[in-house]
Structure formats: C-alpha cells, structure tokens
Length: 171
Image 1 (spheres, rainbow, N blue to C red):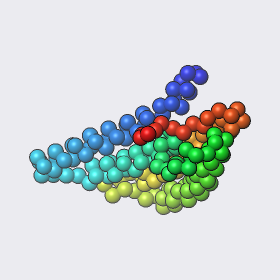
Image 2: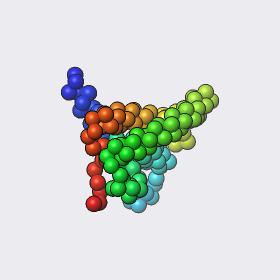
Image 3: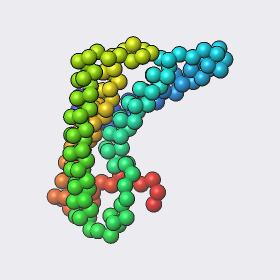
Image 4: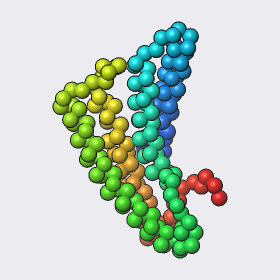
C-alpha cells in the first residue's frame, strides 16, 4: 500500500495531464476532420476541448508547484547562502499558500452557485459544476503540494542541506 501511495504521489498529476491532453488532441482532431471532410461540426467537441484545456492548465499548475517549475526570477538566489535561499523559498511558499487558500474559497463559491441554480453547458447539457470544479481542484492540489514543499524546505532548513530548487531548464 505504501508503494502505491508513493507511486500516486509521484505520478498522479502526470497521468491526469496525459488523460486530458489525449482527450483534447483526439477530440480536436476528430472535429477538424468532421469540419473539413464532412462539412459538419458539433458544439460538444468544442466544449470538450475547452474544458479539457482548463483541467489541463489547473492540474499542470499544481504539478509545477510540486516541481518548482513556475517561472521565477532567481538571480538573487545565486548570491545568497543556502540558509537564506531556503528561507526565501519558504516565504514564497507561504505567500502562494495564502493566495491558494483565498482562491480556493472564491472558486468554491462559484461552484456552489452553479450547483444551487443547476446551470448546464450549452452543447453537452452537463452540469457546469463538473467544469467549474477544475479551479478548486487545481488549487486544492496546489495547497497539498505546497504543504509537501514546506515540509521539505523546513527539513532542509533544520538539517542545513541544500533546498530543493527543481530541475533547471537552462543553466
């Protein structure tokens, strides 16, 4: 069971991102073929692509938090000692945590209003709650990953080990 949770912790976002990306690409390809070959398109294909992209973006944002892959200006990080660098990362995580908590609250408000009034999508005729839930799901995943990051950074601060900075795209 422990192995399963470790695997889930490592790959949950990757599998979700893969699912939504494949859904987006396949649906878009089918719709292009339908439009160009058969001169017919559907509104549901456009909606599936739109909402798959939204889920892809929010789950990707949570994955980027986990990997410390968000765009940042880190010039100062090359000139400060490890302890200060760790404190800067902890401060950044705490600020992002506050933003994520606030955004989670307000995005849940939107989902609850949609639930209360029973709004549905135009093409699929599916409750908008399923699509609007992408935002609170993304922020919930971000909060979870920020908690993991804070624990990892506090451990690095206590032990004096270098803080995790994520993989570098360019050196």
